[in-house]
Length: 549
Image (cartoon, rainbow, N blue to C red; front, side):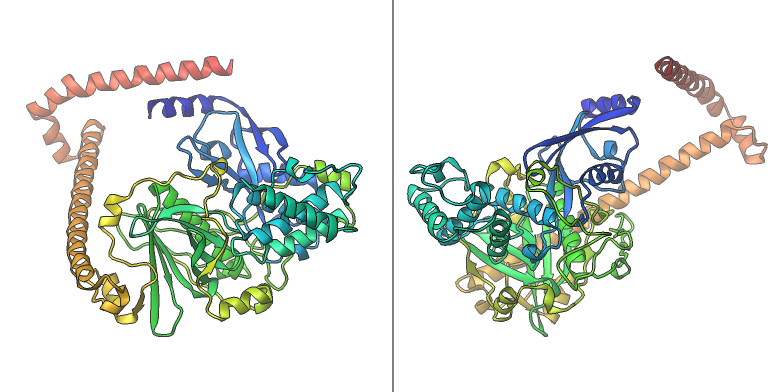
């Protein structure tokens, strides 16, 4: 804590900072920013350099000293967001995946999304079956080296490219066979477009995984995609909720709740546990930002929600007008279109930074998020048909979903305390009456059929845990009240001291000043303390003057 305080003081004395942004093609863009520069300045600087038009899909990500990932907020000071000493290092990534990336108008935007998805494939975030993986890798190979040439491409040439975290020789041979026979004649642009069309149909397209644990302690990955909210466990997608089914996202400490309506008289509550409160807060922010981006047509539809709780600051949504694009088509154009981008330039180009949505001013309290329904043209036909058919679970690959550590995810910790205090069961439908009882803090009445083999023991355990949770909440409320009372008394004491030491000529203040206790306090404590503060202020002022000279 002391080192962070000292590093913050050192940063405040510097006028300029060096900032490096690692781009999607693994190159770096380095610039100098002023001490009070906001995220918007860095965004404008790089976008002007690139002439990028479709900017809303991208964002800047950084990792704090605790290995927690964050998205850089464009409305806040860069230096205040970073928790480390300069020079600052950040990464450019796709923040909001386009639902139909192959139909983006700008070629440069398609290429940047292609680089992001290729990176997702390499790090294991875009996990798929072997047949799909071979086709995706073959498209990458065609885009990178062109048509197969026996003179240039000897046996085993595909093994020189690393498409996945790990793959077998059989898969390498299949990739080479597809490249030799099925993709002959495709230009790099066509191969990239076909790659995007294939990738958008996968269950893990657009997944930025958040490691969590369910109420049973099993590892899970939560993610928000262009089509909704997904939960991945093992090699299966165990939950899929469309954006118009989500009604509320809520977090309390490390606990994250998802509320959804899939039927008129039933509600679903999913509960998961993040490794840290900061990770849970980041998960919640990503959820509400993604839902606002994909479901709202304009910023006026974003509701400002504040908490009525006396001891917590309510969450607030703050989006600039015009930054939530229209969903009538999957592309965003701001100004004249780039008519052509040379192929050589595209490979060396630095990548844009998100203008995007302004991040939320949030706190450790819950925030309801209401979805808004729009046209179905925004969702690809095959995906919407699958969702309408009720396919909530699906096999996503031949292997368990486990993204690479190189993406710097927040490590999954133990949550024995949180698991013991949980009352919800993932995926269990609840009636409206049960939901009201849950929000009121009363024990829920569950049927044996809802739990399968859990039966009567699960009911008894949930009832006991509910009582413990209520006691804990009562104790926390009493502690908060006690702390607030002590704080108010301390403030009143300081105010009384200030008034008595002032020159105000009021009767009751004169009476206080004439008491022996006040005179003793004044000469033995107040005067020495005042001299000490004055000495320190003069010392700090001298340091600042010397620094400016």
